[in-house]
Amino acid sequence: MGLMRQWTIGRVRVSCLADLAGHTDPIQVLIADGSADWLLSYPWLRPHFVTPDGRMVISFQCFLVETPTRKIMVDTCIGNDRQRHFDVFCNLKSRFFEDLEELGCPREAIDTVLCTHLHLDHVGWNTHLADGKWVPSFPNARYLFGRAEWEHAQAMAKAGDHSAAHLPDSVEPIVAAGLADFIETDHFVCNEIKLMATPGHTPGHVSVLISSDGHDAIITGDVMHHPVQCAEPDRHGNFDVDKPLACASRRRVLDVAESRRLFVIGSHFPDPTAGWIERDGATWRFRTE
Image (cartoon, rainbow, N blue to C red; front, side, top):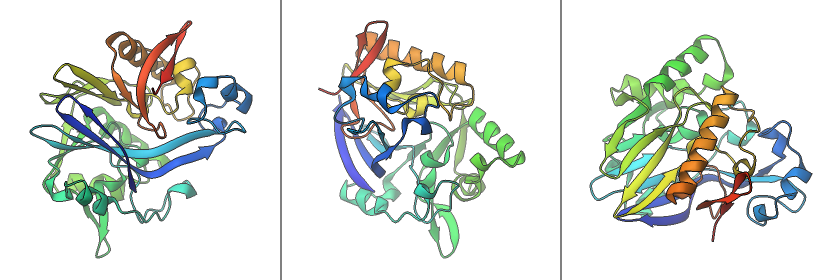
């Protein structure tokens, strides 16, 4: 884990913390009908979001959002000491708690944990291993889980789907401890923070809207994984449960971000992570400067 970037939106401070920063993979991992040449055909993706040989660059990260009255973790990344279906997520050893201390926000100070959805790379630090047991990482926080997300995750677990294999160590201990609040996709968190329903990646997926002193931003969650999806929002993502609905949500976010001049913080966009959406012909592009 490490602090990547910080941004100020009015009176709100957002700090980005990454478990895996600048990870590279073939684009086909994310978009089956993509290619290296396709990525390289968009010059604005270079140098941050595509390698010279056409591999996508992504990060796995989470965000500390500090408002005048709240200290909120938006997603909690992968977590240490896990055994996962994908080797890249296994047995991580990062300094998440130490990094929070260095930000002046020890884990005991967090009052809200907000998960955009319940996939394994967004809930890992919900808990940590202590004396051989998975225990809540933020003992003074309420954990906000989407009601539709929880129902979907339980259905996947009942079906024996590996996508739910992380629930016993990262989600169920929170429910058992009585720290979970099951919320709707239009939930109002506080004066500066509210949710935007962006279903498709998962049934109850949300993005996070920030508004303070005339400044507006959005933390995307997984409505997009890579900036190339700004240019081709209708290409189906491999990990989207409802692919057509995910495309519609992606278009909605891009349209709103462009028309309202939202500062866009991409949950999986590698450094510099944040920027603006601009029209580029019939679709859009992501601009960081």
